[in-house]
Length: 300
Image (tube, rainbow, N blue to C red; front, side):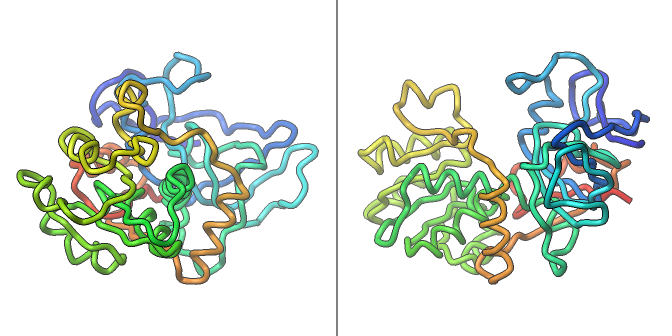
């Protein structure tokens, strides 16, 4: 099979189209013919030299931790899925490929009207946002501040928080202010003077997708550090007494979020797609850090 992989760590240019054996599904696992795979900052970190816990440090590696495709083969003991079923799911690695093998409890059914590119970029951002808001106990009456609100996680977090009855303030670039309004947030431009623009807004919780100055401003806005969660400053979270997202992705959670999609409550914006052979360009697009919604790799 073809896969976008890297044999050395480095910039986007290390991603190359390579040949790999087609993986075989063991007991309890599914082999999926991938149709689309989302691109996450997580993938960029792996490419640059970070290894997730429990992952062997050998090379080459195939990045990609969210995907959508068609079940190709089910391993022994798998029930509820059969060849030809359209699914979306998640893992740690290996989604930038024609085939992926994952445990059957890491996929759920794809709605027939969900486009492949949306399904491929749905799982990671939607689940991360859902887990984060659960950790922050967001409810009606809260005013949630989302830094980096136009990104993949931020887009989902704004919509979910509004669905829960909270008011949402979203920071983003000047170009993304209207986009944030359409999601249901009150937009605020980030950068110099951010603290002054946020003063007096009654913020009760913060989801930080930017770090740096945005996080520093947040620490002054919310006295209860347990209601601040960062997606980026993991190394400082413990010393600051703030939260990070635990490892809590599941097929049940994903199915719940897919149901919100089918009801029109949760929408995912795909800003750009790239063919598998151009995975390096997809990483460059994400590295800019300013785009709205998702970047997705489409697998022919």
